[in-house]
Length: 174
Image 1 (cartoon, rainbow, N blue to C red):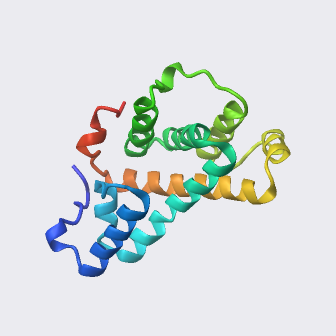
Image 2 (cartoon, rainbow, N blue to C red; image 1 turned 180 degrees about the vertical axis):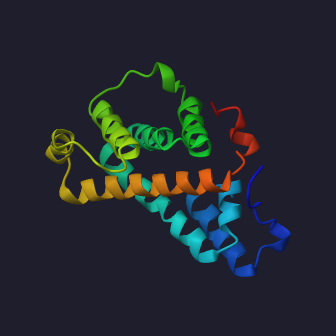
């Protein structure tokens, strides 16, 4: 049971409804239980939804699948059932079973980087950081780390609030 319930649409202020509409239209995204809980504060909703442009940005230089794997790894490392289910759904819907994946190219490095960020509170071994900076520009590394930070923030929010996993995601939760 969530600690704070999602804001029912009937009680949602007009400015938040407009933010929901803009978000849903721009990203073809649902208003999940997390988003409806964040909707209790427009500024909180807007800050957390800045995750989307970062996700779109990292996909441009690491690719769609590696971006999903990176996000899933950070979510799982942050012990967030809600976020992990979201990314498991994306992978499974693309015929990729997370536990059976074989990694290509730089995917293993990105998984190692995401794990290190999530599990070590951002304390990355120099050798791992050097491998990442050897492949990506400073701007790209900043964007990867900022995205991981957004994932961790989302995980913390969902874990603290005990956000209920949406019905459409429940079969993807572990």
